[in-house]
Length: 362
Image (cartoon, rainbow, N blue to C red; front, side, top):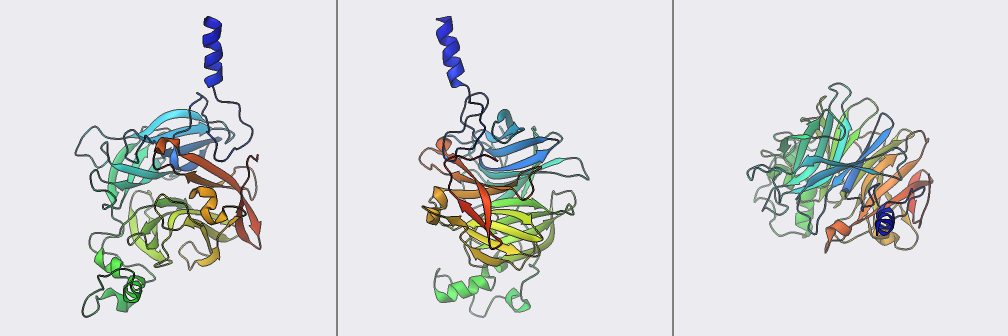
């Protein structure tokens, strides 16, 4: 009986991975499927830290934001819950809220680890459209929740025409998807609507530039337009300096990286939990203008991004010009069974390209 128990325990342990297997169950060092969805990676002192949403059967937060650590990107140790849901029913991050797409960065000036994430308040569906921030002195937490924002309250975007600041005579159109409505959207209808209380923020990411300045990139304006905002030096607030990107383009799930003097961004379209064709963009400045590069995916199921949605672009440490496209394959009927799609970025004519691989190694 003792021998049988030992064998069963050994079988539950994760294999010692030396390759990536996109779409397969990915076990941690305890033998459990990694539970860190919509995640992002931070590298510090020789260790990668993977932060993600702890999922049960639904999309509601019942545990919080988890963190895993790795030295080689293949094998991940469960470091526990980095930011727990609050027991206080009046807290913005109480159990039953929505906490998505966490991104953690280290602030060299303050010595703090700063976590940003998309926050929806309990019982409000996706109406709140806020972004939350938490801090810790350790990469594995525990993180302390500070507050949430509707970004850039009372601030106009830098690339906003003066004429757009006034609501047209007769008001903005109420019927969606008409030519008149699309024109009003492009000319800042939702920016004006949310000017006082702050702009909407849903799918988001954080990007730290080479000069240490941090930027918050988010899907806003009813998910119709991306906003890129410069953060304060402590990475905890908005400076009020921001731009609109691809108004009316319906881009979600932004993931940003830099290569050879260009900033690149990969996003998805707007189809809820259903997969769609990814998009890619390029700019000489993080604040734009951004040019369209098209769908980076190639091959079979490229029109569905291999049934996944972007979440982060990971620069591999010590490997020049090597990046990993991180994406999630959502399972809305059983969120805990969501799978991870990690694929290498390749290049064609200075454009990022993603091809499917059943397994691959760095």
